[in-house]
Each structure stands twice: as structure tokens, then as C-alpha cells.
Amino acid sequence: VEHLSNLARQYRAILISALSHRLDGTAPAEDDLLDRLSTELQKITQLLGVENWDAALLAAQTLLKTTEPGSYDRAYTQLLIAQVHLSQSQKAKGDFAAAIPALEAVIQSGYFEPERTLEFKYILAQLCAGEEKLDLAEKYIREWLSETDKPTAEAYVILATLMVQRAQA
Image (cartoon, rainbow, N blue to C red; front, side):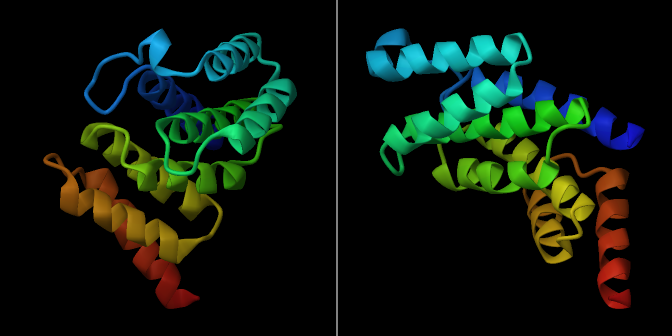
């Protein structure tokens, strides 16, 4: 449990950093988002700041229903949803599995810079492994290893462990 809590802290820091930047590396301008979306996103961010996870999740899920498929607003809202699930996990209340589809949607959106997308894939590999979704975990760690400029021994250990676990299953 302590290991999962440490992972949640790391994931949350990466997601917070990603939430503040667009694909081109600039912070999203206020007038880029519709006023309604901007207001809701500020509300969700404030709820996250005071660790009101349930209200933040409900607000983000409600906002998600109003965003256009394939839009930056949808990708950003999905990232907020993932952040809520991972933040809740720090308090042993959350659900790592619930963050997986949200992060997958973020990756598929293509709105975040390659460096952030790689971080999301690494996170997903670990989340999927923890949820015993070994095929998905292996997919994401292989993608990370093939796309990163700086492969790590830890990533190769994760891949080897996944391969052994899958062979034993």
C-alpha cells in the first residue's frame, strides 16, 4: 500500500504539470476555452486543491458530458478525471483502475506534447500492471521503451516482470 501511495504522489505531480500546458508547451489562454468550460475547470481545480475528491469527480464527469469528442476541452477534462482518481488513491479511497481509461483517452487525443504522452504511457504501464492488466501494461511499457530517448533499467525490469507474469498465467 505504501508503494502505491508513493506512485500516486508521483503520478499526481506529473499530471498537475501536464494540466498546465498545451501541446505547444504554452499555458492555455483563458479566452481559448468557452467561458462555461473555463468556469467549470476553475471550480474543479479549486475542489482538487481542497481535496474534495467526490465533488471534483462529479463536476469533471458532468463537464465531460458537455465537451465535444476529440476536443482539447475533452482531453483536458479526462486528464482532470485521471488526476482525481490518482489523488484519491493517496488517501486509500481512490481507484487506480478508474484512472486507466481516462489516461488512455488523453493519450489518444494527441493534444499533449510527446514528452507528456510518454510520461502518461509509463504511468499507464504501471497502473495496468498493478491492476493485473498485463497485456495493456506490456503494450504501454513497450511503447514507452521504443519512443523514449532515455530508456531506464527500471522500465526493462518492468517489462521482464510482465513477460514472466504473462508466461506463468
